Image (tube, rainbow, N blue to C red; front, side, top):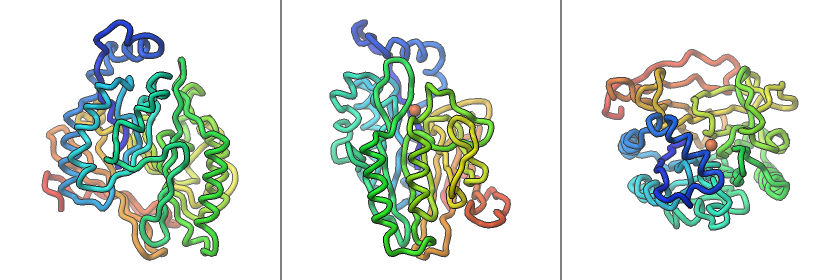
Length: 321
Ligand SMILES: [Fe+2]
């Protein structure tokens, strides 16, 4: 599972900077260009190909300004991965950055048959055993803000899909992995400014928890990595969650290309293994390049356990175990 890639190119022509792109181009010049290093995505792809997972899931923001050039480069970058391993992708807000890019549906047309993705309707498919995948398009072009949204029709469709998948199953077999660019919950202390939030996050969580027994929310958008349980999560405005959130787990994939003092070679990617048996919970591995470009693999404690154990570093090196 891979989060925000943010390939970037400053537009060459002044008329390309009309509207919100002017703001985005200013951000690129202010330092975003240095913070996102595309070669780290190529290293992650090589590692993922060596690990040979059954599927690849991407949470969007492959581009920065939604230009045709960025989409073409993003497609070339992920092609070696997605033509070998079946991939599901949801768009990010930077993939529908302008009204023109959204109107031309670049975030849909750019990939052709390379990936499966939700279009107007959410995409739902079985994964293995009790687990289903629900992929949601949560993005809309905005003039100034980077807010996402869940349309009423999308929420209605999600409710129907989730309750149909849950029908005639005991609660422990209603297991749902939800792929959405925006977080619908956040850890305590990370309240999002309203300009960056998912509008409709609360109703989305309520709809999911009404039918599903175990829910794994998978997203990017905030360039940090975390794996938290429902009890540790808050609404995106920082207020406490209400309702049946015990079965909820939230995974932020972070950005494989963003460098910083804590992650000098990006925030890596996540390998999640799902199992056929309902009683066997998924395992979570975070693969991240250290400062010497060796892959560190950290196994996280099982998040649905009553008492989660400690996480462990299980491998350091460049050959997958
Ligand atoms: Fe984003």
